[in-house]
Length: 114
Image (cartoon, rainbow, N blue to C red; front, side, top):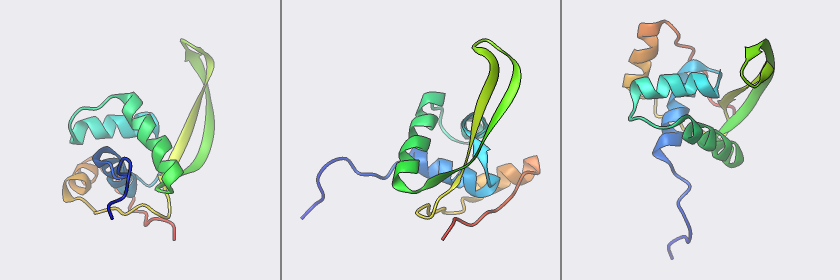
């Protein structure tokens, strides 16, 4: 019998998994900038949605939370939540993503937590 409800698979979330596989750890806006260079355009809000959903599914984990001081439109401090791959992430090791990060000199292949 077929499963009911929406499927939990998402192409956007899988692409974010690919990005984190090669970046190691990143916060939402870093992922958004890399995503829009490599894949069809999405909004920043969609990236944050999939980070949240992936966290619920065990595909992402929070690595650390850093507070950065500065002069922002919303105040004097920004909170950056760094994400990393979780135990249920299944990276495909996409060659296009690997080539992008090799070109930028940022390849940090980190296998998912077991």
